[in-house]
Length: 311
Length: 154
Image (cartoon, rainbow over all chains, first blue to last red; front, side, top):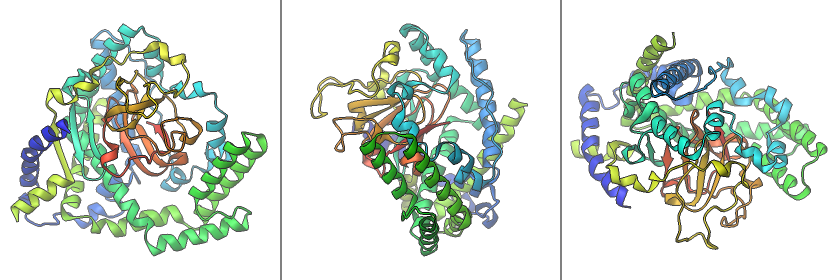
């Protein structure tokens, strides 16, 4: 609790500053309706929909380029591959139908995996660093993330405290793109916190409940009588635990996962969720909405900076 | 009104710089190259009930590390890749006997990617991210204690 006490003391001073900055507009809502509606930058940032992934790709490319240059300037390799842009609609991202045809929910892979598989990172930089000696790894992480005693942090209303590097190449790169590290942190964590809140509201609506009832009917017609996707996954996991992995169970998992996605598409559930989020975004507090718009503006500016770096 | 606004906004989100000593516990050198080939998710902190005297709060480079208790206490697990269902990884200090719905604090020492903790298996439900180099010491103080069922990266 010691750190939280320190947290609180500094927090009050910063909160006052933020409130003062936020009150300048006078209007307690202070948000343009279009910003928080579908197609608006704030809504896309909040729900990671629309152009979000394209913009985020630009930010990632720029950040990776800056981190690589920073590490090189310190005499260290950063063997990252260029991030791949995945072009897909919101519905495709939500349903991942192609992936489900290949591996279902991915449960077979988890249950059949050699435990050592969980230790194999898909990141080439991770794999490179893990081949270094202990001393070299420590030196590498110090340059990348800075001194552990010089961290910065953010406190979120719903999901608690998050701390992150306050020095090092990652800190320097994010600070350059976003103007300062706290803007990066607020964009990263506050929007996620609010999206989780919005999702909780959406799944409690009668419209969503009704849509999921339709989903359940569709699944039952296909021979998979589950009340929700969560129940389907839990049942499959229990069977893997009880029976062990087998080709038969793997094929069953794929059939259930594909039916799940097709029934969701048939019922328009991904579109419904976005639409319900749009209709509920006005129920966020005035301060939350104002924060979102401010963060969306900062995000757009960061994307412009990133475009200049990424080329 | 101004006072109410101040209190409300502080509850919404408060941004600050930590005093250097606040996270001194995470200052241990993360390098543990020899562990890469060691058995996965075996309790790396000794103790039958998780309330142990010797704490290892470190997290080796390239990993998402997570602990049974807040403040990086109790048994530690770690993943470098995506995992769709943590129930397939045993952990005796967890009530269910596995890591599903058991993590209370976490660190991301992946060098390239953001780590995502997901509420449900196969990356479903609410998502809580940890940027590279990031820490979440108190999932237990909020709404995500013992609620992680899968993880993904980037």
